Image (cartoon, rainbow, N blue to C red; front, side, top):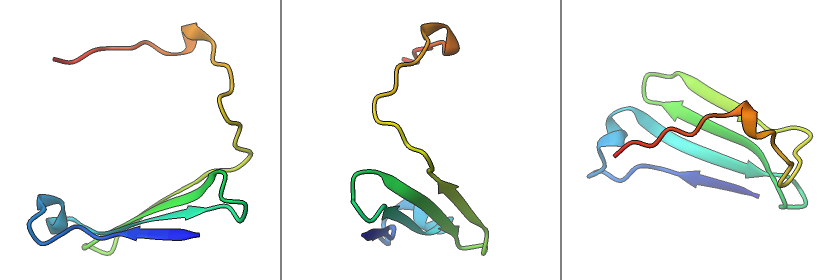
Length: 68
């Protein structure tokens, strides 16, 4: 399953982003890939492999910083 998002004409991101495509695995339980296409022709692709849902994280691995 694939979903494509295209910024509307009124959205400021339309000046940079052509589309964002999200692809799910065949079983539709996890994301397989996110692809961002820019108007300049550049593309960013993030692929997810060996996905584990709600895996425990060591609290010392990250620091949470709040912004107001």
